[in-house]
Amino acid sequence: MTADTVTGTGLAGLVGGDVARLELAPTGPLRVGVIAAPAPSTLFVTFDGETGLYRGVTVDLAVALAALLDVPPEIVNFPNSGACTQALELGAIDVSFMPVDDERRKRVAFGPAYYILESTYLVTVASGITTLAEVDREAVRVVGIANTTTIRSATRTLTKTVPMPKESIAEAVDLFLTGQADALALSRDAFQALLSQMPAARILDGGFQSTGIAIAVGLRKPAALSFVSTFMDEAKTSGLVRRALNAAGFA
Image (cartoon, rainbow, N blue to C red; front, side, top):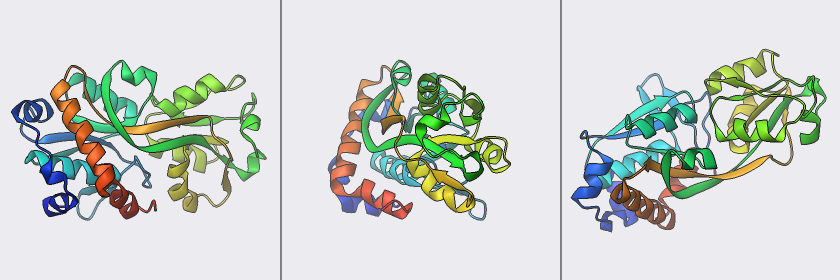
């Protein structure tokens, strides 16, 4: 996505001002936190080893936001959204996109959501699990991603087993693929891309969490929050978000 693409959406009419630019890009570039995974989702990006570039919905949105600010984007990868939240809270990055929950609201400021995700389980066929209720058994080994809204929600809703936290999506997927876990807790859209790698697995109907993926900035940055909120509202109405989702394979 180029600056010309942004201009073509009508987003060029959004004017930020010096205060918003200073709050959003205090070091020069717009430092954007992303989460890389083995397969893309509406949140996760992938890394192209040949080009050295990250690709995905949040990268496209970040590039458009940086173009609007007239600063270069700097993509910073994190193993999970918890690590990304901490970096944003500490000012190591300037903006990110992440699922919203009450714990995160204490640490970062959220603008509008661009997608509503549902968290559920991917289970092995060998486990015999066919429903959400059957995941909640003492013998079931559940794996999730550390410090995320999904594993926090899974922990609250499971009463007879406790999810095993892993630092990265790749680690959790590997545990599931090697038979060391019976159920993997992630968002339903993430499983759509991962399922081709897991022929002996099924996605359970229903979910245990529904929340929005929203743009986020540091606390006490009112000009930055106002700017990115207007940006996201315009990005949705102009079709920019829809094009980014389509490009990532989420029609």
